[in-house]
Image (tube, rainbow, N blue to C red; front, side, top):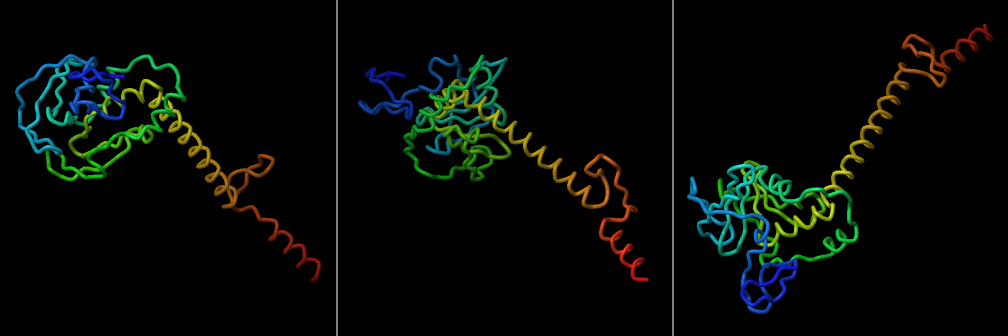
Length: 227
């Protein structure tokens, strides 16, 4: 658990605001990555505070620039940057800690903004609200063309989710779903082929479209008997 930089009181995992002194804390990047402020190529406005954001370089694999608001501590990542940050920060996750994941899923993040829709800092289009990783519990704001926004405290929650094996568990579930869908598709195609007059019969013999079915053969026998 992090501690407030002002009064040293413990800060719960669901917020960056100290409940004792009200100070906003930089818990998302503190102790994660060293960073430096750089001159922005183009000014981007915070979708929460409507103030110019700072451009910082996390220096991951070279230059790694993101935008951050110094007031609300929210961050904007260009497409693919958040995934790259998580990959560089969390390593050697060998198992799924279901107990920790259950605690994270049960945790109701302190959301001071409520359910709200904000605009992309690049194109000013209203962004979509998406649950990152489907089950992380962090609702990110995503622009399909330019990137995504994380409110203050959400990066810390995401990293804890990944460390507990949340991403691994989600990937396993998705792989299993794709496997089951593929099996079901094979069953459907086989059934369609057999009932359509092709494929194989119960004993593996080839069924040809020209072969008469059972009802046709019985009809022929009946007609022959009544002649």
